[in-house]
Length: 259
Length: 335
Image (cartoon, rainbow over all chains, first blue to last red; front, side, top):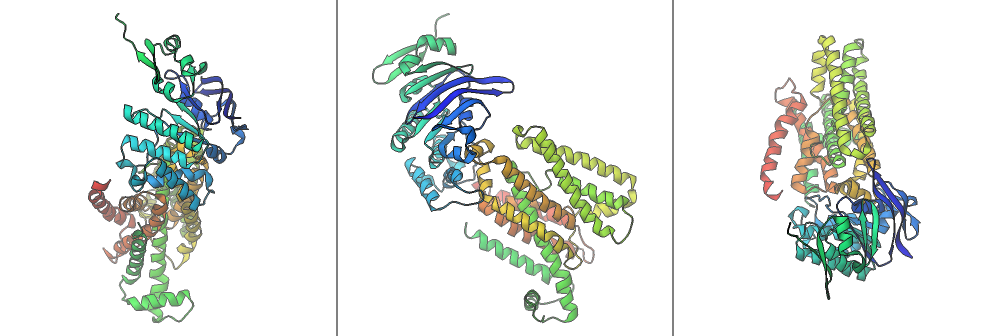
């Protein structure tokens, strides 16, 4: 059974078709990366899956059409980590992570013991216990990223949507975050759909890559199949070499040709 | 954190006591407390007839009214700041003040002078405030709910300007009413027995319950509309309910006490700076501290130039602003 199935997904924003008849499936436990040039519709596709923009076509989460799911029930299945989360600076890390329990609470209700347990587990898994009482505006960029990830974990959703999880992080933090996601995927059996700018990292961490260009799916498959010089040159308009580095996958290297 | 609740309750108790004790006639602390309980529980009051009337018919209603209005304005301000994620939002943001002003001016200008007029003014102010906010809400929605709270705030500004223009026009046509309207606009807590308290209590109670009920959801909204929606929250519904509750309460407060500026901004922000920004603490503390703050402001308003009274709106701004400046400076390091 696919954890996530997109069937002819189209999104129109301000008259422009940003995602165009996208069909794809993400298997249970799989990590799929959406890649493509700026404006290809990667983020919009994620937002459509999270139910944040209206769409045509069909998004199914564990065989259920998301349009038939109440917002709250969708949030129990799908957790989104946005590229630039809104950080309420005066909130403590623990209170912030506890917000992830929102889909499990009644409208005017408050958290029960089980919700605090889930939040504590998420804090622990992301090594945030020492930060639990700190205000968010005292954290570094990498620590905030982990806090947002912990909030998504507290949501206890089987599908994790990550929008550019490594944007604005240095190369060490990038690896750290992706390793954490991979470990969580294994320990919690999560299914991950992420957008990625860094093609090399996308190829190293994702099981499969979906290449979007102008809203359409133009290539799908393993890193070996998608990260080819021809495809990247055609869709990114970039001069690159793709180097097969044994043990580290395919490395996409920008090339500057003498003019 | 736990220290702030007892501290704020102590502040409120001290304010209430000061409110009933301060006045031209000396009543005494013990008598006042004893007599108040005696009235509530239907026992015999220890005060003489005249003193008892001063307490029960004059001071206590006014103090209680001040507490309810103050708590309501502070809670409404905090609620508005939460749903609009805008620190400068106050209860009058969506045109409630301008609408109430227009309603009051129309009555002052056109209603025949009779005993009914005194009753008509608060009703007109209430209706004016409600109409203005509903108009702003409708305009904001039609301008595109997708544009988010900004569209709503701009709609509020638009409606407020329009209603103020109308009010100014009516006033220009009826210059003799300027005094009456002006003194009303500056806000005052005047009571005739428990009449005003009776008017505001149902609205205030309902609004407090609704706003406090949403305190957890207002925390969720602090991560922005999109993320709140991704967490399963129906943001539009939360906003509508909270704005409706805050508006009705504000309209009721305006109707009985005129426009009292600054309480809705200064009280929540002071609490934010001292006790943190979570709405779970902020909202109940705003009710308690707002109540105490307005009672104290009223004590100053009626004693400073006694027997004349200062408009209470002048007092809240005059003492509130410097106090807020001090809080801002001393907590700067932590912010």
